[in-house]
Length: 141
Ligand code: CA2
Image (cartoon, rainbow, N blue to C red):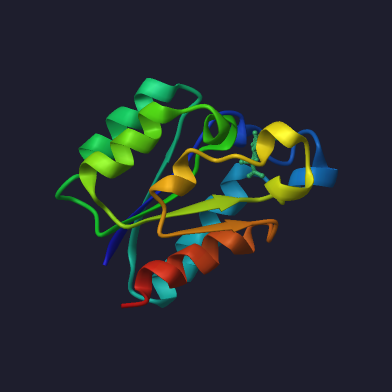
């Protein structure tokens, strides 16, 4: 099993600001947490973070034929990006959407997710543990 974890805009700033919403841990801490979890389960994992919508689309397209699953936190693009939705549909790779915060109990504009229309499951409000749950979802047959 080979999975790709994609994080969208500003998630490289984790732990630097807004700890009340996103926690105190950094993006490097997140990568280590997921890497260790995957290693214990013999899952190969790669990571990609970008602040650019087109780069995320390119990465999803590049995953075709290479990965068995995608875990994605599209961040702000969750609520705006038909291009990322279409890319996930185009490659047909099982994809689990993750949000650190609970997007359903924040501002009204965060309640709609384009990506959820193609995701196998959406996990929100569980902090970094949501990414680990997403790996488990991809491991379920
Ligand atoms: O809860 C999530 O994981 C979000 O995807 C995070 C996005 C937000 O636009 C979504 O509605 C929900 C924002 C990520 C911003 O990350 C920051 C990290 C540190 C400091 C400030 C923002």
